[in-house]
Image 1: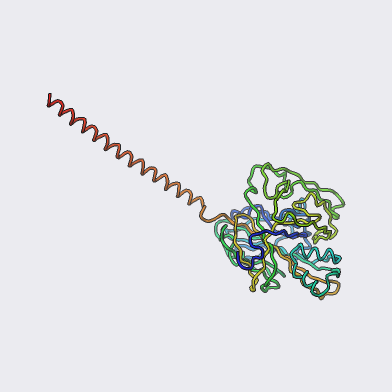
Image 2: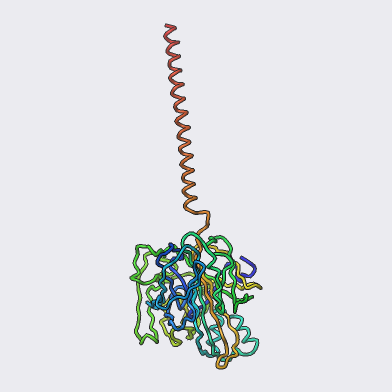
Length: 405
């Protein structure tokens, strides 16, 4: 890893309060085919609320050299997830983005400090300590800005590096779909259009081996991340929504969610606030949600800081889905607020090493069969010579023996 990797290869636990992600089950599509992008409001594994259309101040799709606004009628809500249904265009590397309007949340000092610590906003926490504000309550203005990159067909394009002019956003410096597992990738973080230096970012990855859209197992029209959890929402007229299904083979998002973690001895934190884009008073049963610690959904992430040019460089250690998340917070000068934050996420998929393509395998098999055929030909040739020589020797001996008689 590069020098800006804080904790080497040791994963740390970052708790998230309703992060927002654009994600797909599979990031590869055929040209001019049907595709679905999901908007998860919660964690990368579980969405706990849908996003109101009037909260989306921008929803864009970039492909074939054009940026187009996504029509509100293309979005649908189901089981706490917001779905975007679209038809892909020509081959290329496509980009989708959503930016939300700001909202307000109030927290007492203790809850605010816990949120800063567990969501990786360490710089603001240290500033509060340095300026003797650690015991001050907070009124935060926050907004979220999310992107995802996916591949259509076999031909790549430059659409992936389009800057959407969000308040904060991740912009890769290499096309993820021209990279493979084992390669390094560099991603720049921009704030108000300028590189954001020395800023804390969480990086995570998920396996895609068990999430084939064409798999024969059934989810009853639910996603693989909705395994046996039960949410009650304040804005759903107190109706209880229960989703359940089972997987015979356990995956990263398995129903039991029995993931071992490097920091299993971490303390539990009670934390009732949530940056919930649907309802600030959202409540749920934390014991039945993926990876919960008394009220917080959490993900296993690697924590890094950007360099002086706002760039993260890290190794793509495995194939699968990769995602980045960060929160930029500053003290607010706006009346009625103490702090202002902007949240950013990015997701994309990384293929296996380019040394394991089917064509290579077929070529190797063909070469191997060629060698076998060559060996068989040589063996047949020597056998032929052996039999001719044997017949000649037998004939000579017979002639000699007859002449002596």
